[in-house]
Length: 286
Image 1 (cartoon, rainbow, N blue to C red):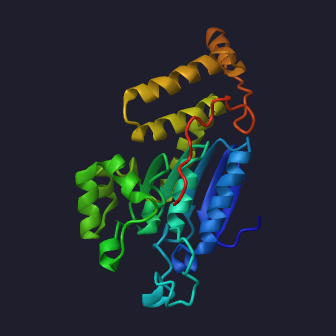
Image 2: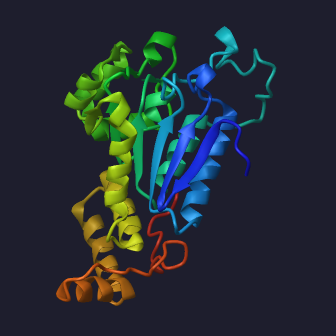
Image 3: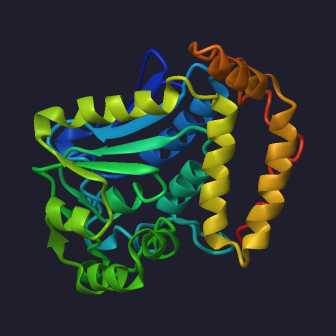
């Protein structure tokens, strides 16, 4: 797929996806939604990709939804779009749900302004790094709308309910330092060092690790956030230990450790995921 509003660039085993509307501060559109979903589909199908970085072109990461339609931006009837008999789905939520399903670790390199969907799209990313020049805001109450992109599920789990409510209710824009203090981002980086730090972190996920182990671990950690009892984790852990214990990757991992040499893992997420994967039933949108 040829992309219009994102860049898809591989360097070795690291993929960088860049939101690429710098003249509009990378404001989110339906085109960008579709391209991001396609990009994550492509990344999961490509065994060369071991980790993904998402960043923005120009000075902004993403300034939120494109408000080019003015006061009717979110009013589909006023824009003459069909609404009768149509089940509307939030586009940001479609993107974050696809990120949630990813087999590859995702790092957000938030290089500038990130408000509205510009910050909520980062919540299912595994690690967020932020430039010291960025501004962040869950600005929905300032626009008279509600949180989207499944952020009412992700945000309290990441930062706790008290911090989440304060940021969302006030709708205020806050600093990178406050984002770090509140647990939203891992590190605040100098603007000219942000991407290099993201690449360093991404490489640490890829070097000397089993791609299938990382893929399974990612889904185990994220999905257990919503589990009702630790027994749910015990069930999945047990299946994973049993299956992977017989696998070539575990044999190589143990042998390479004993021989004090770098491991050469061969299993591929595109074809070697265990027969019990996925162990969940994906909910339907109703």
